[in-house]
View 1: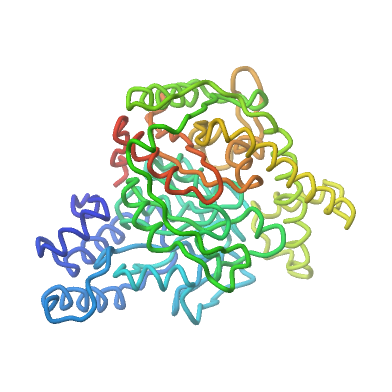
View 2: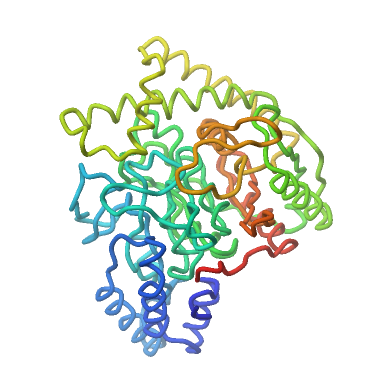
Amino acid sequence: MSALTFLPAVSMAEQIRKKKISPVELVEAHLAQIEKLNPKLNAFVQLDAERARRAALDAENAVIHEKTQKTPLGPLHGVPISIKSSISVAGLRCEAGTRLRRGFVARQDAPLVARLKNAGAIVLGVTNTPELLMAWETDNLLYGRTNSPWDLERTPGGSSGGEAAAIAAGMSAGGVGSDGGGSIRVPAHFSGICGLKPTPGRIPATGHFPVSAGPFALIGVVGPMARTVADLKVLFEVMQGPDVADTCSAPVPMQWLSDDEIRKLRIGYFEDDGRTPVTPEIRAAVHTAAEALLRAGFQVEPFQPAGLEEARRLWHKFFVTAGGMLLRPMFKGREADLSPILKQFLDWSAAEPALTGETLLDAWVRRDAARAQFFAQMQRYPILLCPVAAVPAFRHGERSWQVEGKTVNYLDAWSYTEFFNLLGNPAAVVPVGRSPEGLPIGVQIVGRPWEEEQVLSVAAALEKQCGAWKIPPNS
């Protein structure tokens, strides 16, 4: 374990600016951590070590000659990061875990990657995903399975599982995932780190594969992942902003509220949705988070929102049914290239009645009605606190769990994140507790669309009260 690689990203940048550590030293420490841990975790699928070393030398020279340079050092100057391998990084593979894109190399950086590099971040490499991102665990026929740094027999989550494992294990200071049904938040919860699912369009999804279009544009986003909320904040500030190629984007100005203004936000919390039970430790973590925010001066009240089941059903139509309809034709004649996880997903999708123009239009209209009903409730509770998932990190291959005497199936276990993909809310995850097995438990903080700053501010207050981040044992 290298203590240097577990510093917060903001501390790394500060110490580089103060010349207490060098970017070269920092990159070498991360490369050594990757060399030590990646064989057992399988988080990175491609390293860019030589280019990272060159960038570190350039960053060090920029610090030495800072006073004579016209451009100030960026907020992430010299900080080593990673990127999910479904997002374009020039010169690196962007395969999204599928044989259909084996060997595909991106020609240019996605806008968010270019923004991170312009802020001084150094990309170490790209991380593993399930095939075409359609799972809450990470395994594929190209690179195999990613293991959790908390327990090698368990998954770090998916689809941003490689990213979560890399960050949790100190192989990366932070990075970028994507989320269409919990794919940032579930890995953050499983891996004991923080993650932010923004409003669609707040951070441009341009350069992501599968392309953010059709139903995926309504529910899918890209967002930051890190070990601390302060790191999420700086990553978010760097990446956010409109891009002409993202049809959901809008020129939303940054609006950070004062501490006094933040504490005036009423918070509603629920420990379960009345349909899918959660394990006792997850219920306890939500209760702990509510009490912590109450101690921090917030007004916190129990609140069960209406319309969650409608949101879950509609998300299923857009992600599972429509998603399968979009993906199945890609494998016509190439069925042997299907990974077992994606084949299972497509089988689930095929078991549903196919969407027609009429049923898709009906679902779209119902989605808008569900959003209007939900946002009306959030006038009283602009922040919601709830579980991330029904269970902690599961063992590889598990597909159902017994919770409170009820069987919770695979697709149902993540309904607590799926709600907010359908509704378009920003949501952050902060580690709060531990399971009896010592696994991390995160709690979800949900805000209104385009109010990521409020979500992150409440997340920071919760993190300050709970301080639950720990170094995993396999680090």
